[in-house]
Length: 209
Image (cartoon, rainbow, N blue to C red):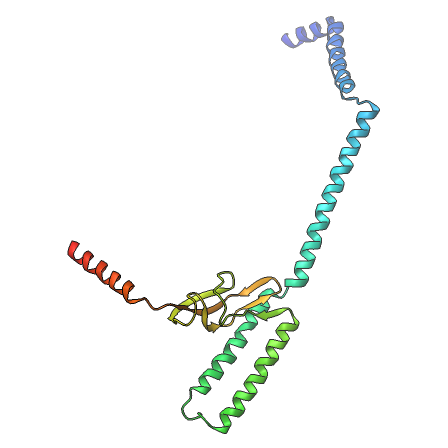
């Protein structure tokens, strides 16, 4: 019974239903009218879209070119750094042979060292052709960007912080640091006045304790 009454009500008020539908249609049409732009506004909107698209394309092009250049210039960066172990091993082998008592001052040692030096120079030459060069260290002022100080050696003849010994050779690949040089730097011997001052400080600390 209830369903039949609802149907009758709907059938009895067809005009009201049509009015509701018409109101909804008018609302949609009104929104569409509001969305309409003048020709000048449409042109400006299109110009903005084109400008944004062009800017995005330019940014992508620059990123691609940078990645391409980096890949070309530094693509072998990791390989180059690993290959430096060969140079280190050559230097260690040479030092070990020179310190061998049985081989000291022998002709055999001279020949072996000569061959190792040839290989060493050839390797440095190959690295240089690929824009990899050793960092200058000895007698240079310590540069934290290029050198890593491993120890200090007293030397009054040189300014404090001057590199007096190279422990491990560092290398640059173009403008990038491949690895820093491990070095020993000079420090000045404390003067007698400074020694006395330090001794007095130690005594004072002991007395306080």
